[in-house]
Image: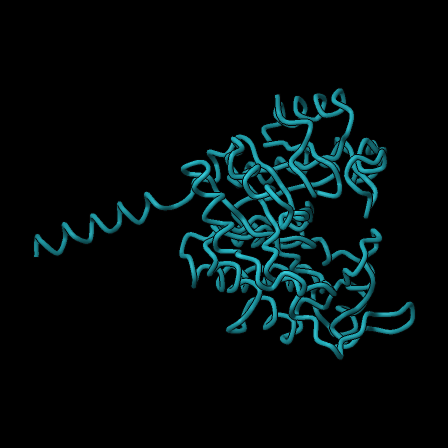
Length: 324
């Protein structure tokens, strides 16, 4: 009996030691384009960032043979203890992904896409991205619950977890209208969906980390939200950029947040504090080319207790305005 107890204790300690510590992260980098370019992975691997959020790349149709597992191994090897998360656009169907079948069609101004869970075009103007009825079982099977889902593919490559985009889709007008028509609560359905993703990820890696992007007010809509995420990231708190702007072009950043309502910088910062109080690390992503704007963001974000990154909206390189 004593021997068994000693073994179980050792397993418990060892298992806990392997768990990534998201709260220890002080710097992070976010790149979801250009990873198939020469030396892109090496530059990230050799950087000093504690956390990397990267495009899996192999899940895109044109890069199906990309060595996703090899990329993750290099990124981990570059800095012991580093956390590497896969970017997953959970709330949108992307026409360049491998799951997009030949008979699928994007939506038009007056009609849904094909399949009919594809509801509308991206409201920010991103090409080939289409918000979906994320509660639809067909979409959930593609994204999480199916045996060859996006989540299972990337987690099997060795990622430490997932960085989920378009969680704020629950508040999109077209999605909310479709949810109402189907008698669905869009906020609760989004929390349920993240729970499904989390379950699928943790079936591969019991310590899988889930970070959601944006959706600052979802915590007010459904208190269960903080039960299904480990951290949260927010874009454009101080400065944003225009969609589809190439790296280095002026519209890729430095557009100040001049909102006066709940999207204002002051209101956002106060809202983010709710996540800190729930013991969830908050990461901010702002888009600037000018060093003085970047400096302002780093100082303000850190003063509020957040972990900041200033980069450019294309997210296609490592930032040229690194944290001081």
